Structure formats: structure tokens, C-alpha cells
Length: 154
Image 1 (cartoon, rainbow, N blue to C red):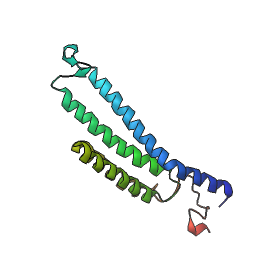
Image 2 (cartoon, rainbow, N blue to C red):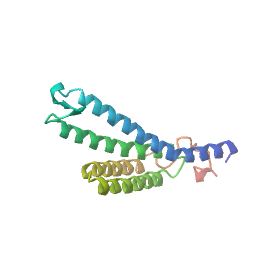
Image 3 (cartoon, rainbow, N blue to C red):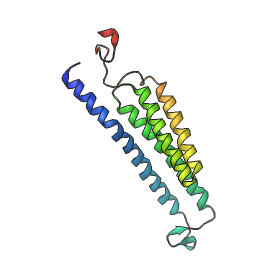
Image 4 (cartoon, rainbow, N blue to C red):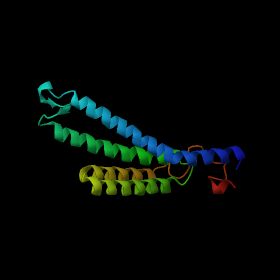
């Protein structure tokens, strides 16, 4: 393996957790944006201290929360998987397991069971799909002549 390739692989491994965190932030910002957009439909006479009190608001809010936690699971697992230079199957399942522990901890601590369950389901589906995908076996930068990623080439 050439020195520049090894350095790139090290950088990519360092970026795996950062990509996962970035995925979580994208979902957080997207969820806040969805809440803001939905709140714009609340009639002014139903706004009390900056909070919508319309009868339809609580279910809409819960749907947005569940969608956002599912999106976070997909983006966290997906981003870590795509950035990983190798062992992508394992990365997908390890990130799912770590995120799953966080989801269970938050469900127990907050009672937000639907959000936790949607995050667990979306994370599991994402990890399973990615682990079985054609991208799971090698990195995007791998070449057939690279003995580090293709043992038959060495």
C-alpha cells in the first residue's frame, strides 16, 4: 500500500464518527425546519405563548419527531458506512448498535417510545440494506489492482 493511500485511509477512519455526528445534525436541523414549517399553518388565535394549541398540532408534531429520529438513524448509519474506507458491513452494524443503545436509553429516560422505535427500525433497515449492498465489500477508492482491498491482486 502506498504511503499516500495509507494516510487517506487513516483520515477516512477519523472521519467516520464525524460523518455520523454530521448526519445527526442534518436530521436535527431538518426536523426543526419541518416543525417551523408546520407551525406556520397554525391559526394565530391558536398560538399561545409561541406554541400552537390547535387540535391537529400534537399528532403532527409527533409525526415530525418520529420522522426526524428515523431520518437521523438513516443518516448516521449511512454517513459512517459511506466514509469508512473498509469493513463497511461491520461499520454499519456497529453504528446501528451504538445508536440503538442511545435510542433505548433516551426512550427509557424520556418515555418517547414511538420516536425510539422509529429510530431503531430505520437504523436496522438501513444497516441491513447497506450491509447487503454492493458497496459493503470495498471502499469507493478501491481498485481491482490494489492488494489491500483485493487479495487476488496480490
